[in-house]
Length: 251
Length: 64
Image (spheres, rainbow over the protein chains, first blue to last red):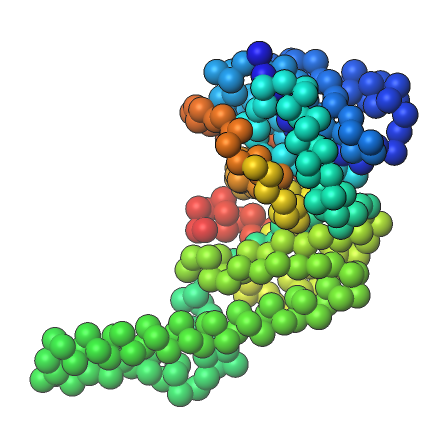
């Protein structure tokens, strides 16, 4: 029987209080939660057979539920699903070996929550907007260059040229939106990470780490951005535990 | 907002949950044991979803 680790939390409570918190929660398959403490950091665990760690609907949601509940009262680092160690001793040694890195990460996320922001657009609709693509480009999009006696090769080059111009203009636009999002987020102290052009419709995939007390400020910022960019769709999810702002790999 | 629209938003939320639980967080190399089963999409029910009605309508239509 191994020990599955859900998260590593900052021990601001007495051990008896931690026990009380954990007794109100159930792990995957209804397992009782336990903990392993090393100074002021605690690994929340449960007993698990390796063969039981199946990423099905029930287990993954139970797992996420435990982390979500703990994050409401504790500063924590979520641990990736399926992290199983042989024994409590192994976990204790792991915490001791990585104490400083864990502490640094806990300090970074203390009192903060994560939000995800996805920005979608209809590229075809945007292609008619001169302020985004430029008058000259739009004329080309409307009337693709081509003569009746064009070779298939020239047609192909022209098609590729148009695609390149669309992509180039869209990227400039995306960069300007990201800059605007970043500028707006300064007011709520949100630290952001951005991925551009995830696919044709999902032009921005952003993650924010923000003080829990400034959650409403971030929501307000996104609402304002939605009003300013009616052709784009902003979808904000959260608050999440800080899954994407943990920077530690333990070997 | 009708039930179909809400269902679609639930799908997006559960995908966000799974992406985080399975791919993010503290990584213990060499100790990961995962068997992937058929993961159905359901709603965790604890997350905030903020979006315009227009977005939800588009999602409902399967535009994205």
